Image (cartoon, rainbow, N blue to C red; front, side):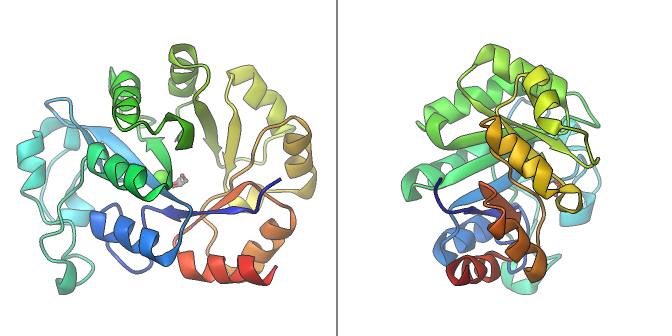
Length: 243
Ligand code: G3P
Ligand code: CA
């Protein structure tokens, strides 16, 4: 088993505006092994990187991603809300982030944000783009929408798919097998030693989110989880070095 990977949650979001190229580049420079990000579909079918289904929180403008064209989305400023230093940072496309991860040899965890809103064709659009950048071997597709993961699995059985979940599931590896996914992304407080062990025995990697407390980082590193998703890339890298 290799060392636990460090996945930068929405990029290095402790230091730069979440889900922007500034945050992804900073994570790469800091030494993260991979990037976690969230995707939605624009009105004209582009895969764009943003957490919420509306642009309000991160750009100050009104509107649902699904009602805006890529051109309209690209005009928005997704950086100023954090600091003037990041003024003008656009909402990236998935293509831009895939290009960075392909170039830097990073992993990418693409979270499909289709649990509150349905995006017909999102699964195919994401797979097409992953292939375009030759990233299939270093991609994990996760979602709280487990039907969507089932669709990905049917379209591409070899793709690493991960269930996201908040509940303290009983024997989660059994459920993961039932869905047909290959890994598990649990909310960190639910992670028990016995569930990590059960998943490891079943050959299913566990990657808890979003782990920002050092004590919890240490506990999960000791359990040899396959990866940890964090906002604090450097802190986790230091904890890993010390373990
Ligand atoms: O992928 C793990 C984590 O990102 C899920 O929660 O709300 O930060 O997308 P959220
Ligand atoms: Ca996410």
